[in-house]
Image (cartoon, rainbow, N blue to C red; front, side):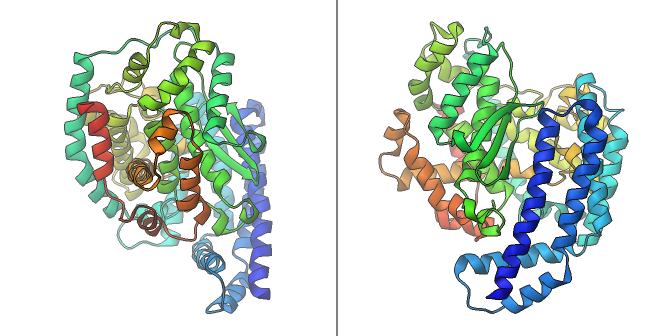
Length: 492
């Protein structure tokens, strides 16, 4: 159909503009000189404004109407469905608001980096107030049934609501708190060897890159760089960038960051590259995306099988590990400690961080909390959740980059990712005969192929809930996740 091809052509043009904007964003977080930030904000805003104008042009509605009810294959039908959803949402947002948000977030990222380094919230506050006003305005334009937070959440997790998330957290929290108590008590009773040592950055880079490629990441279509906050960005077909940060006293900080981002990267590389501009070639949600990163980071990277295979090579890179055994390493990377920094939290305490952030940002969006009140509210809620007293804003409300990006509604998807990851991994073990033997020998091809078949290949052809049911035979539920945590941290 000519109308369908017109839609494809238009969205390829939009994708080209957005990929240029993504490249500018990646460059800002990796290489941009500080004095270039202000103009970079204008560059990114210009690309996004032009892309938004193309997204909302009247001819798209004409093409969509022409395609409605036409005889299209499954992927083309899914593309029309997703284009319709995106068009209807985009039409509600004025183009000038898109430009203002992009420029404000570019400036806010730089302000956040400075404020985090200084451990002081005050300098970041006006930037966050601007972003919050813009995001509330967008929520009002989109509309919502119960909470403005739902309008923002829709950008990251199609069909999810804050009420559903609150129900999930209400189901998850009581057994999780019991697990935290049991796991942290066990760690205190049986402390692991300290990983503190000397791990040169160059050696970490070499080791991390080898593991990343062994998992299946195509090094000819990606790279790893250094940033303040680790992330993964698919800039274009066959161009997926990972980042991490390094601690020369503990190589696992960068390693697990790389394993996490590699999971994201494998998803992006597993999508149909020829459909980069189409929903069928685009990740369906962040709850699914985070399931990929958490699966490779935790179910694989913290397993005994992983270290049985990789410890000998780690010893070749790091002299500090010369006398370490597999038992030593497995024990060390599976300790449960209540701590301040989310990205360095162990599996069993991780979701406590997400619950804190969810409550704070939902209150912000709904107007129950002001930006000025964030540090005090954060510290109080974090103490209530963990019993730890935050000493400065860098280890509290400033620790993550997401708010500076205007990414309100993102954080709950980390917990969705944890739950989905455990459920997917349990299904893979049942469906792929001999998978555990493969993993013990450092062979990851069949696991990756299963994920390609069940998750990656589908892009956004199925919504998140349907995709999970299709892959695992049931809706997302925390049963496998809690069983995984119990087996690894309490009964092992």
